[in-house]
Image (cartoon, rainbow, N blue to C red; front, side):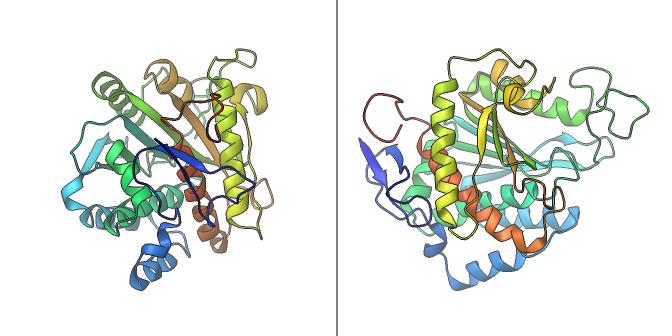
Length: 325
């Protein structure tokens, strides 16, 4: 059964509404409306500045503690310098084992905004579920979420030059960080199937699809991904009419630049994910990697608006003449 989910936060009537096959789902997509004043104050406090690594670890532990019966603290290992590659596994009322959604953030240390975006989405899933928001409960009841906000706490990058501070390593999965991700993806593909993978980056305001390693190969899922990107960009734009943030979308190699060894190609090709994207967060260059703290909260709220649309389309039948997709 399809039900069009309406929300003043997420989508205007002229944009698309997320369509979900379930019953019943009639609540607002603005989960913040269902949160207590204290919880909303906590959001404003945490998301008004950037924080050191240790504080991020504690914040995520606090989130996991708020959902103790339907979550587990997980790790894909330790970084080269010994830091925990931590995350949370969330599941719904019937227990774990549903198709997986994997969020993977802060691959590049200078891309500060990626961490709070992933944290805010996690917060909305947990507190929305606890508050009885039907939409959020649908998402968590139907998918297992594996969420890793900081997957590169040491900070190395992607240069092929072994003398560079951003040297990518001598071979695929040569770093413990990449090896941990690859092992997790293989396990999820074998045991649960992967519905969605997002690698969160900044900056540029892009939704990047496979392939990145090749500029000319166009995959058969491209029309579905482009339709989804269009609906998400409209939802993000309409969630904040002052900012009116929009995103460009398409195969990464074609619309941005060639990127050999990117994780979305890996998770699509070897993990079999139905959606395997990189999201390049705001802005488009005015501040670049150093997005000011006063833009954290509007940015994370916009991304939640986009995720509500995306998660609502994961089981949608596209181009059947029914619903927005």
